[in-house]
Length: 143
Image (cartoon, rainbow, N blue to C red; front, top):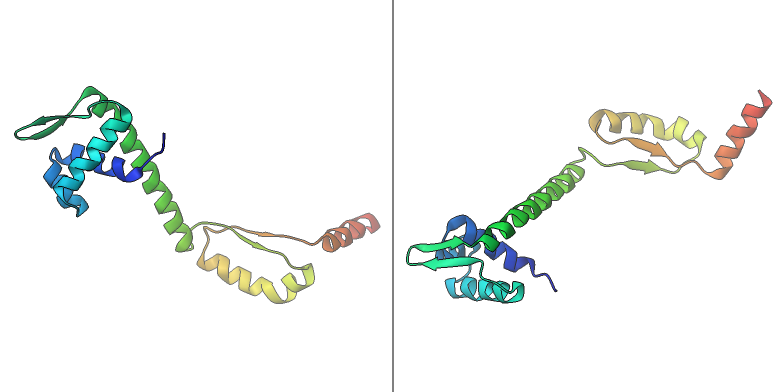
């Protein structure tokens, strides 16, 4: 089954507002578009999700079950968006630098220290070259 997330967004807003026209207002689309979308979703899922009444709509048992999963999915999307925002604001993430010990010690270290002060939530890791690791290992053997 092909998933159309827009259908589920329409379903969510109908369920939350209890009305196709209020959902349409919330989504900035027409009421017939909302009606058509929910019919497509119901057809794809093979069952009715709402009871239509003169005062609006109410969820069927199947609709109530689906709403629980849709709310969880939307919550997960929200968490993902917040994580990306944190990374974009440099509050989280990771910085990896590949440089020799000499370059790090004599040039990059002051910049890295300043960056870490300004962005303590971002750990840094160095990506030493094989040459640097071999030199360090040889030095330890000599000592």
